[in-house]
Amino acid sequence: MTTMKASQKRVQAKVEYNAFLAECPSRQLLDRISDKWVVLILCALARDTSPGQPGAAHADAPKAMRYSEIARLLAGVSQKMLTQTLRSLERDGLLTRTVTPTVPVTVSYELTDLGLSLHHMTRGLRSWAQTHMADVLANRENYDARTS
Image (cartoon, rainbow, N blue to C red):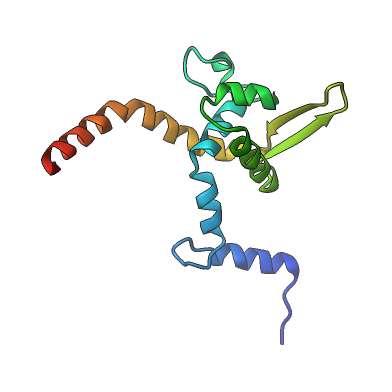
């Protein structure tokens, strides 16, 4: 009987990940990264915002942001949802949380290399949504007129 080393088990597990299978852990990850707040937080931390938004000039220079900066940038996000989302992204290793012992305490968040690689994938989703929103709204209007 051959025993596998931990590194060999990890390699085999990677090969076996299949999001089409119900028990695959990659489904949980897909659920997390497809969330609108995750996409927007990644864009905010990467300084990849829309023209005219704060940080737009620094799209190629991700840097740490304070909690309050992220909250101001993401209009409509509740404090609870932002906190939960930041914690889950930190747990997954997509961002780091740094606490600076000042008065009051300063907390900042920054993308990890893993988070930045995900941002490169998700920024296209945000861009596509913004670019094609007029088309989608027109299609919705046509559909609703046909089905009413």
